[in-house]
Image (tube, rainbow, N blue to C red; front, top):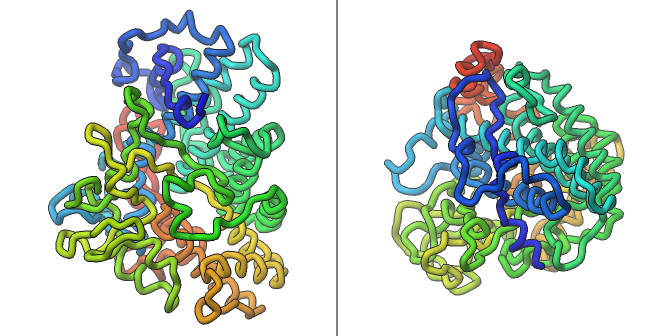
Length: 494
């Protein structure tokens, strides 16, 4: 059975979908608490290998739920950068402007949604980790399922720590009301738990899968995310060691930068981890992604809503002739490589081409672009993490070599553009690697936190209102603080 389609099958058992409060044990109900039609009673679930499979596939399907891939991530992880701005029409969803100028408050709905989305992901993973060990089933499959859950839990905590700093660390499903209300855990301890999960996952997960399971989490994904977690802590020796391991696993850069983001090239040689999506007639759960819809070309039949659009600053950041500029940005009035004519007039001069799905693929009754996978970790990221770590640890030759692999792919054989970086000066090479990260991963939800971890928030975002000592993190949702009766604390400055 095709995993890309099967992973969307959601389990409606109360045991899997019960809302797990991170805060106070109150009687407030969530929609997740309500039994669904044909729900499987909790007592009947977690019995068989098939139950385990359904639970793990539901965990994957949750990754592309609205709060995980749409407005909240755009607000928290993209629009605050210098690469993206709100888009759409001037008056539509004006709350995004509060993230662009860093005035978003603890009561903003997107803050609450991002927090809730990540903890919902953690709950799905914890349900698997708590219950699957008790199921009598194939031992190798059981261990793999547990490793996949550990990766997904680690991924959610990675996003939470980047966004909020200290966050409650929940590694099990609460057994009773006494375990609901957790305080914030120092981020160093959260990072340590994340690294342990990823170490465990990498030790168990396979290097690759057959076609039916394409898109499942691999050893390479666990090692690469571990490298990224280490990079955010400036543990450069670990980053170097982890990325060196990934570089020995057989990944390669997809030769055509623009085409690697198209639906017919999903899960290609460069893919380390993608969130799977598809259009499956008759299966709404499988066809629910709105990642491309919310970012699609506004005013075009088969396009989308036009949010999260590139800035002129990003367009100006590319070196002369860099093909990645046109592969990343759809310009008003152009015709795409797939033949779609973009309106010459409209609300926005640019759109995100990496989320673009040809208009002809739209099927009435489904979200535009629902077929598009979300590229989370690419091999290019592994190479540039390796370059940065090699430079930080004094190995400029390796740093230059890894950087050059990325530039050579972008160059596509044209020796007149993107000359090889040859400087061995540590500061100059660091700047070149940071610039390469910007243009290589533009509009992929990394730029904002990249700049912050590099210590350049004031220099890059200061003109937009960013303030050191406050805007390194977002506010903790006020509703969560209220529910906790003050057990949760607020970040400084909010």
